Length: 389
Image (cartoon, one colour):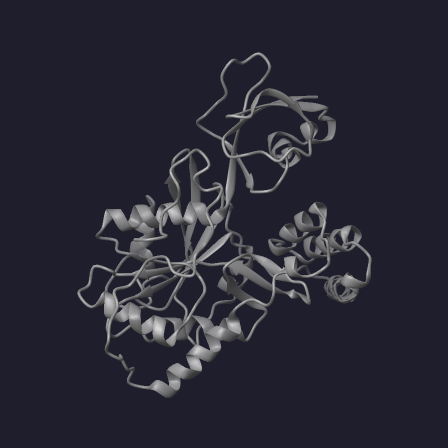
């Protein structure tokens, strides 16, 4: 499966970049037609409209590390107070020049709206309605979405030790079921929400999508399902400011538009006509997101999906030790996003480390062996760090 696995060296996932296709399909000379081509033409237009706008990195904003950190926190804010605090931090850290004039105006508008919403809540004398909370665990959160009978629950059970209800009839999943997927020395949280349709799009799922590190739409390659599942998932999203894309970010032209990194899981690849169904999806539902053939009955495809999930999270593992210890604890690394600094690791260890950090020693093959670094050092995967306060 070309492009579905990472390199095997110590930084195997460091250089991994999503490809437009996760595998190569055999060529065919015949044209496959859908029963309703007009409907599928509209679906194709819908998918293309859901693709991200030009990346922030193509624009002269020169966004700072602190701004991007506040942006990540804003994407995962659970309350209006949290949203306001993140927006204010984003505005403080935003470079002020002509290239950010529109973004400054957008942030000011959002800050004003958040303050109004908070004041309205206080005037009513009631707090925000009860918010669904799902405890975050592991190195990252992956949200499985899909239509009825897409096989999400079976995938969750195969990837983790969770025991969701699995049945051949639709709408078996009624609750949000989490599970922990092990990968090497870390664990990743996988969440299976209730199924989505064009007329049933749970508001909780809509909230969880921008807060997730990765979204994995599950498309069943069955003859009766392949045309429908993307059509059920994408229209509700296209009507909102929550979008799926190959990378997570906020739209620089509209901070309210949020893009979440996405990979496609083409499920039930063990069926005899799975290849033909995959070609149909490529013809009528073009997409730039990486995709992976997977079957709960095939351990090899599950291993490929596990690796793809971890690589898509784009994490760096950091092991810590005290000055008195000769060897670090390799069983429980701290994880940060690639490009983040040693300061983020220190904040996870203890807030005092971040506030009082003087320097750290880093062991990193093959370049560092107890090298003294400052808080702005950008760790590599599997670095060993010794903090000094």
